[in-house]
Amino acid sequence: MKVAAEPLPMVQRADDVPGPAQGCWTYADYAALPDDGWRYEIIRGVLYRMPSPTTIHQRAVKRFVRLLGPFVEDTGLGEVFVAPLDVELARDDTVQPDVFVILKGNPARVTDSHVFGAPDLVIEVKSPGTAGYDRREKQDSYARAGVREYWVADGGEQTIELLRLTNGVYVPVGVFQGASTLPSVVLPGLPVTVEQFFE
Image 1 (cartoon, rainbow, N blue to C red):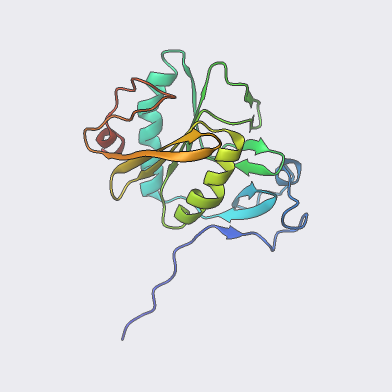
Image 2: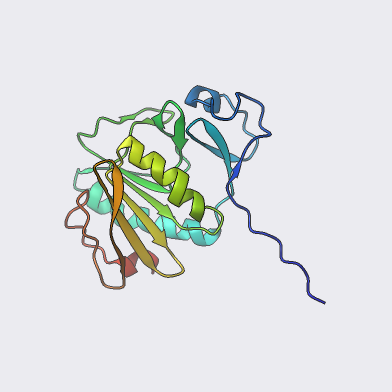
């Protein structure tokens, strides 16, 4: 007899959380939430509940930070950050990108509690429970805020899709794999091949 498979955890609207009506959440409301063990994000004033990341996801995130850190931070280009860290893109948009880069000269404010403003580069590591959300709501939020580059990393396929903001919308530059290096305008000359991010 076949046993029904349990669905994977996925991003869901947090309609049951006490607070403002959906569509009216702000960073101040979000910051006032009690710690209930869940991670949340706000897109256009709608509160979403995030699934916990898997170990596979977290290992990929660690590799991005480990490889980007020396190129960005040790050379004085800027800083690399990792979730969970709140990024208030707008009054009604607060997200926690998997990995993000803020270059020197970026007007974003890094405070003790969170970042206010758009990073230069955001990287999301694809997970089954967040893939659709990352490519719809979150991608649109990053574009509205002016995030210059958006990388979508797929650990299963060992690829990175690079999207570049052009006239307010993301234009795909390409999907890269193996020994390719990324043609990033945010991090030009990054001497890391795509396969190194997945080793």
